[in-house]
Amino acid sequence: MTLFAMLFPGQGSQYVGMLSSFFYKSNNIIQKTFNEASEHIHINLLKLIQEGPKIKLNQSQYTQAAILTASVSIYRFWKEKNGRNPSFMLGHSLGEYSALVCSGAIEFSDALKIVFLRGQLMEEATTNRPTSMQAIIGIDKKQVQMACLVKHQKKNCFFSKYKFS
Image: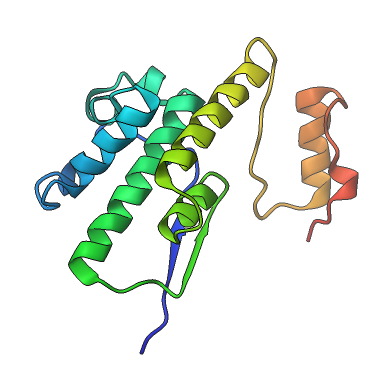
């Protein structure tokens, strides 16, 4: 028996039109899952991912509910077609909630309410506040320090507590 894992994505993997290729293959699993989600958070998520607008889909409260729902619907599709359970489930950031739902640790309806609220709080925390985040891949400490000094004029750059290769 071959062991395999499922890794669920976090926020940032959303786009208008996502999952469109599944709507013809899934025997309504995708639509049913999105309808179930929409009932719990009172937003037509299926219409939002199919038609947008992109600006609304990219708001954290909608993004997080859409990504969770997409992940759960793909997992349900996988289970119907394959039947095998993964040996491991994990997720990146928001994807942890998808892993918890698909592993049976929490109910889908509870996770939806949590991530919808989580997204609302994240939106509120950043409204009218300058924020930024960057991924640092493959550069050395001095380059990171220089970028922080230039970009933020020595503010909010806490590179000294992290190790760089």
